[in-house]
Amino acid sequence: MSAWPAESIWEAVVGLLPDFTVEILPEVDSTNSELMRRARSGQTEPTLLVAEHQSAGRGRQGRQWSSCTGDALTFSIGMPYAPQDWSGLSLMVGLVAAQQLHPDIRLKWPNDLWWQDRKLGGILVEAASTGGQSHVVVGMGINIRPVSTPETLRQPPAAMQELVPELTAPLALGHLAAPLIQALLAFESRGFASWQPAFEAQDALRGRKVWTSDGKEGLSCGVDPQGALRLQTERGLELINSAEVSVRPHPFV
Ligand code: BTN
Image (cartoon, rainbow, N blue to C red; front, side, top):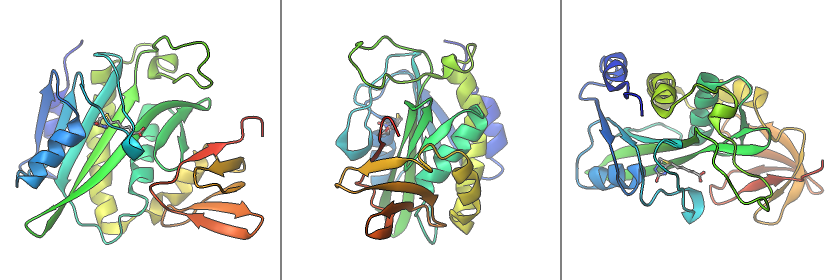
């Protein structure tokens, strides 16, 4: 694997976040789990933690997130964090990643990156509280190299090299890390609303008929200024904001 741009990321960020560190580990169970353990034990310095391999990567809703070395970019950012309103945070993170990586990437509410209706990456946001201080861990996994999948898989994952053949995990991190940290700091002071129009422009679900995992069905009408999904159902416009809900588009609509 080519060299990780740890030093240039550190130089771009340390002025904004004193005590910021960048760590690259050949292997860890999960970069989110590691930074959550550190936060709970009082190690709260702002940290970008990258793993070349995760032995127990985690996704939303208790799912696994697995990848082999070089096939994906897997990292987490942990830092003390106290926004007035946390809603829309994972949407903003996905949006900034899409903007930095490729204009054709779309966002699937609430935290997936999609390309051509296939999952390209995902985001896992977790919060901890230690000694009266709140802390965030933002984890991101992005498929870089296409991997072979069973032909029966309905929606095989997408990979960044289908869009940018020369991209590697270190190059993708170099594009992403500093803008993402700058955006996290902006979100802390002003919330999601200013990102709403840009999110809507890249929303993979807007105008499509969707199902939610808790049994609702309707037309996806974008997101509100807090990042809740606006769903036009038979009962009227409903706002979906539970982190426990997932949404799927009807395949042929
Ligand atoms: C999802 O799609 O449900 C979210 C996937 C998030 C995966 C990333 S990989 C880096 C970080 N560490 C983890 O264990 N998970 C996140």
